[in-house]
Length: 547
Ligand code: NAP
Image 1: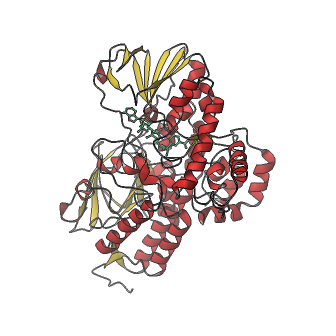
Image 2 (image 1 turned 135 degrees about the vertical axis):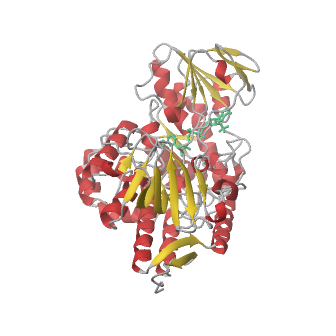
Image 3 (image 1 turned 45 degrees about the horizontal axis):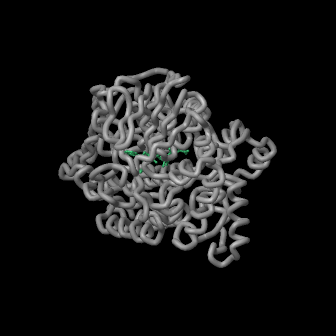
């Protein structure tokens, strides 16, 4: 890998992040639009989320055949996934392969963090500085920073006094961690922990799970990829992607039209049982249309899962503690697991209910709760991320009149389509807040955003337009629309990171767009067809725009 250092360089575009988003964006900018572009990434190599999240058991909840790029048809045919769900090392290998295949590395500067991006109104360019001393100016500033890239480690009293080892799941050591025979404490029971717990339990001497909120989770039914299935998929890929692009969640599934409330109890049970046996998100997408939006319908799904927990977990007291009662199923991120509840039947696993006996402090030797103390060799923080906005705020991003993005978004992110923010011309966000992003199969949403941005830049060039800025009114209306849809769902009923509820002091605002990938695509297409309505387009002085 060649690493280049750039000082005071003029580019067409700077992209932050070398994950799925940054890689595809670079390809479009450089090889399709013929622009000069540079990607900066703090990591040592490509991968984004999949570079950092290497904790035991890390894999994706989307099935592998649909968790990849669709723009390269040869690659779709050539790449062979080994598992039904792709594991972290395989996704990382895939992204490395993409970077090599498209010869992207020569325009990616690794080990480099963008520290500031300031819009210069005189030049109508972005002045960008990195922690390596680079100074770059670019016409376009594009973020591909992911939605879950800034880990949050709770500020628990005594945290720094612990004498053992501690890790966050989102910054797992690349050389791995030998947990054999160790006393391990894991704080958190979100997606990361749910995957890690069953794997760590097999290695650790004893595993203590510090649970604040019990979770609804569905068995993934992970297995080796079914070769016949993959062969069939490959013969129908165009149709499969097209279906995914216009679906609610970016998956190639047919929407169900039945209500959980209009079938008999027996039929409902049979539908849920079939979904449970099939595993994965099918339980959610393939059951009933109203589980996510109607509390009574949702109660039937929630109760089904509760009955499964009681069935699987042998100790009734542990089963009770594992049973969620304070939020509806799927109002927090829907989870899928492999042997999660079964793991609590192991003798070397203890569930510690910190909702009822909160952590008081981390000591030199472990964790002390209100009722007990736990001696530990290792503490794992599976405590999530400052989602969707945290990574933006780590950079000093300033638009017109020196307005800081952090200031503008003080009461919650404000964007038009999750792509742009008024006052920040020529800045584009791939899967930014206000877009389907984390409520969808990410590669589908990433491709849609990258293609939208790339088509927009092409349009600007063709029409002699220098600047594109979200219109403030269009932005206000979009934010209101996102909130109105969120209020029609059950999402606001849970304290989730979708609402910023996991970060003390973060405003409670629903951040992703919950209206579905298909309707969102329609909206974006209409915006483009109408000459990028909702944007204020500034013509180059020398060449008036012909729009
Ligand atoms: P998360 O879903 O935010 O879960 C964090 C966990 O830590 C929660 O159980 C939370 O409890 C707990 N926690 C946070 N602060 C705490 C504190 N101060 N004291 C005690 N407990 C605390 O984070 P995550 O599991 O890393 O997942 C984040 C997102 O990444 C997922 O929702 C998903 O979108 C993505 N992800 C995806 C996959 C996949 O595809 N399989 C895997 C991993 C992650 P509360 O619930 O009470 O807040």
